[in-house]
Image (cartoon, rainbow, N blue to C red):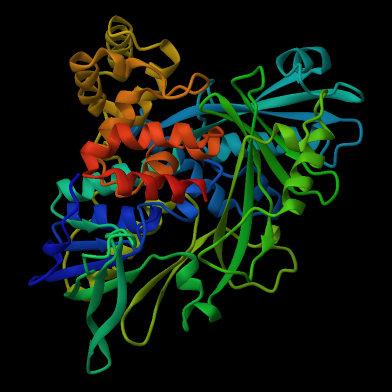
Length: 528
């Protein structure tokens, strides 16, 4: 994956997508597979906003059954099952526990009915995904870190998990392989119109370091017959988007590991909202909040009251309480939802819609990580209709670009054994194979050349040095933050001090052409 801003100039594209999150990436990938000439630009790094700030779930949305949003749940469950088959390296099963206490808002009978409906809407998903009921003793044994006072029992059910930033990156890789021009750190500055209809845009290369005084950022005119705005929160802030959208902030905390490989769906006692406790990369995600947002779109910060809320609600369930000292990391993102009169953001539908402005620009509004593929297919359908092109969706049941070509279980076993022979520990090997799919062979090659690269970056997390170096060489990262937040989520999963950042920046500096001054600047930016 090599970035080349010059490929945008001097061409007429069928489609220009701006916004490199999950909807933009899926739309560019689908359109390129259908044979359209496609360009996608992103003002920052791929998935640098909402699409790397999710709960990392591929799920139907059990809680949406309470608001009778059966259509959204059914669609999401169908996408979940499809993604599990299309991308077993990228999307993997995750079971959730739901405790039932004597004072739970939703009792055993109601929960049983809801989970039965969830299974029905998934069209009999099989024993690995179907719900199960446990009595008090059995459920407490399954989740020993939960308080058992007044516990009546509980349920488990199946959903799925992913690494959201790498999901987007793999789709960008697939779009490039299908012929799309994909450029991050490229800002759309203005539209070009002819007779009131958009026919292109001006874009600026913002890839150069602000500390590099000798290089000027270039601009280019990009001609395109159709343009899609998939910028999420920035689309919501546009003149058109303000009438269509509502912004909702979600915050997550990264907490120490709990003794379970299953997640929990819990209900906040203070306001009745659903929140999650989720294992991820050997740590625990706690989230999320749900509140209207009217602040700075470029600096969405985690606030002290959000930390206090999440800790307080989790501690109502945990046998041993978490404190602020236990918070390892945190992140916040903005969900874009359709404009609604509902008082609480939690009551607003997460479904997606496409709007088209008077000048012909298409706007992607709302949606979920899980159902983004289907929404993007609708975007490309609209683009093809406008271009009078008859081309069906090309992503449905299509294997992901990095999916191994042999049977997945056999591939896992064989590559796990290879990793062991190379000195890569089992935990790091598991996540390496999920992160890179069949491209993991190239990471193994780096370890064969330099065996010391088999070591972990930090002792407590399952990431090896070779993984970081490969990402620097081949995954279009321009800054240390790109590598340590989205290519590998180290910045939220552990506390890296200045010496850690310096060591890692020096490791990747030759691959990225950084001198000592640039290394210092990148380390400083990450510390902020």
